[in-house]
Length: 206
Length: 206
DNA sequence: GTCTATACATCGATAGAC
DNA sequence: GTCTATCGATGTATAGAC
Image 1 (cartoon, each protein chain N blue to C red):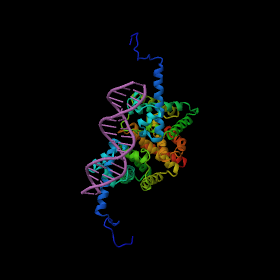
Image 2 (cartoon, each protein chain N blue to C red; image 1 turned 180 degrees about the vertical axis):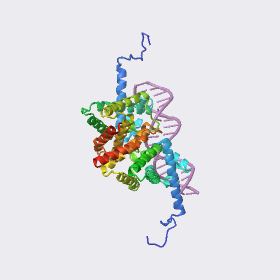
Image 3 (cartoon, each protein chain N blue to C red; image 1 turned 135 degrees about the vertical axis):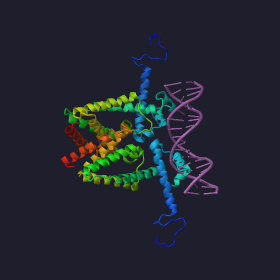
Image 4 (tube, chains in turn red, purple, green, blue; image 1 turned 120 degrees about the vertical axis):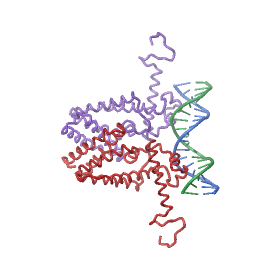
């Protein structure tokens, strides 16, 4: 790597070449299209033929961007968490930690019902045989640890307490999707659920 | 229907004929086989060819028992709730309503992690486009109302309180499956979660 | 990187004989 | 009710030319 020469098909890492940027841009367009399909046809409804048609590529050309369909799901997994981190980063959180945790929980339940396949891919085990690569899983961890910080600030001090928190948020989301899609029957329980959780944590030293 | 004669291919309704009994028995064998496949290959992994092979029928003969694959899922939906009602009916519940609710919740979380596809089919919206028929949905209602009775006995008096209860149970199940399959990381939080729920309900008049 | 062409498996569902 | 045969669509993935 100390060589002063660069082969014609190599690009220096630091400033991405036009070619590399274009490659990433196309990859991004493919991901967007995949999410679009998933939101109407479900995750299992993503067919490479349809996907290719949406981005004006031949189906086989997709393999220049993703080695397999699982690799596509893996990229979607990381992309989903990346977008989630980005979106929640834009929330203006209250200075009151309890209020902030309510905002975060409500945010997650709301976006879960607005983007069902993302909820399914990121928070459940929907696709048989799919497991994220360590690199993609790292993004999930990042999101989870951000949630842990918010929970700790609000007084959830133990692992068990945080597990209970994730279960409550996942449960509210899951029930909202399954039994009142498009509504707010479980979404409007979020504040109450967080109060319940924090009161319990304070009383029982979680 | 007041005719005294019966055509050769008709059977009186009251005592099921040998033929009708055999038909139901085969239908039941098909359902069992479908669950078996789902437990190893996932719900979407049920292929009518494989299913037929398991019960020593040709693939096309399945259509004598189910009009379509969705009809099969619909029968599985009702069968899943029926078995769930049967199994929970065998639990020896404590006389203490709070303890009994813990037992019921723990039962649901445990069987959900032991039979993942049943959890997915009954409690989530996994299969795109599938909705249970009213007849099958009635079985779901029966199960839900039994849960409501147990929750009410323990002091959950409102609809919102019961919705929160179902969210907590669904959330514990979902997290157990997704993030600790085969373990008990969320299962062991059940008692604590129910205490939290009931204390909150009593304090806040839910 | 992109294409056409195609391999090759599998799917749900139907036709028609017995 | 059961079978064989088959349809038509769809699925992922690869070969090879440009």
